[in-house]
Image (cartoon, rainbow, N blue to C red):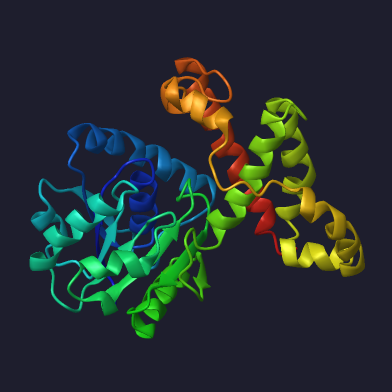
Length: 309
């Protein structure tokens, strides 16, 4: 049974993951090489806990767990049943992390990567016990979105996948087992297909960014939150899909490169919220308000989606 979790790397997702695991009764030890990331995570834990309160997510009968911040990887993984790697999305950095972990953990400890899309088979090649290595892809913000992808690599034992699936389920979350280890898994493949078309439409001057967001959020986004893509096919009718896709598929963006619009903005240091400008411009005051507003709306939508009445 998994009771103690080591979280390596805090970044954007770390505080939310730690908060959700501890609320589920697990003991979490967290570590990051950056002192600034640790301090930021400390400050975000209470906010994440407040959101969990709004969602009505209470601790199990045995009580809530805890989150502590460790000074070294060795201290972090001591006694851990599960290690979640959440370092930057770079295979070299991840491989270095696994090499550091190897002499510190026993062969029974499961190592899970929160990679957004690097194939698990590639990552598990850098660890001594690949059979105990699995993908555990959370969606941002992780303390609000309940779906977590579980991905086994070519050398992952089925029982490792089953253990992580069952852990996620025991926390009241929604495990989705991805049957084949494809780049990007499922969530990000679907997301990036949408983003490719969206960026292409804006770049070609078909629509303004603000209007595209309105179109997606209040059009397909509004529907897909309730009716998933496969169910939407049935709702619309496969005959309609067959007819429209017969001419539309050939006209959709299928570029293999990165859109020049994105390359130009990245070259100018316009990365989005983190830099104050991307597709839109942001002020420091506006960022906090925007993030709070989005969290509030995501909480409200989740409550509605969970309504079984």
